[in-house]
Length: 254
Image (cartoon, rainbow, N blue to C red; front, side, top):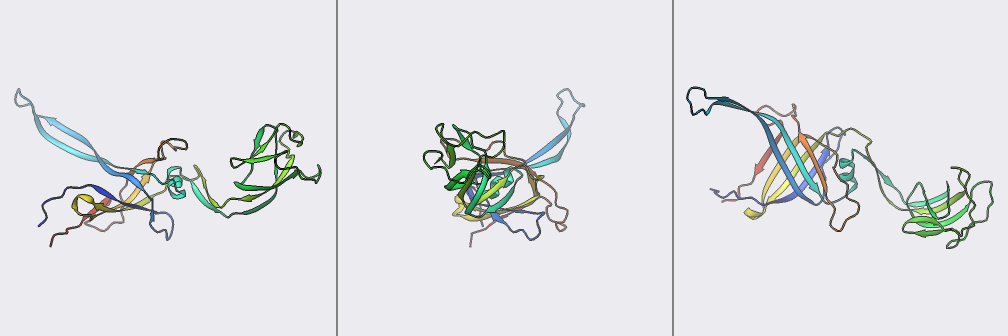
């Protein structure tokens, strides 16, 4: 019979979007924290029968089951959850003759993410001879820079004065603040290091996360996405089972 239930937890957090038909569980990657916190409202009736006082009766009402987690993988999935965003796969390949506005001494804003610049030419109607790489434009730090000595003429307002052909990087594009908070289901495949890695599995049936309070983009330490939210009742759960979450604790004794 097991008598020691000491616990040091690690494991994998899986999540799925409840409102997406056929959505399966996807791993959130390396997470350093996962916690559930039950909040309650306390009603107490003082004992007025004696000078010493005390409590005559007490009622604890559960008001919330809060969820918090810290993810260290800034993956498209985690960013979309943290930013109420949508994710689109971007296929790498050539982008031809994208019109843009070039200003000397500045970077050019392009629609895509270039890995290399093939050519920069005058915009339609202003000539066909391409400008010279390293003289009229420079590809540096992942952006298109226009030197002060460039032969590219000044643009008129926001009218494009160049067209750019470049190689588009392959990746994923996360558009922030595009949806309401999605309803999520979590599965924690936990391991108890204090019990030789025995299984501790938690199913959180229905939850919503708030947006991340911070998106760390520059720093001298590994980035962390801290997200908090709350569990909500799942009325579809069978009778006699929790509508909020359940925990399975493996018994490894013989």
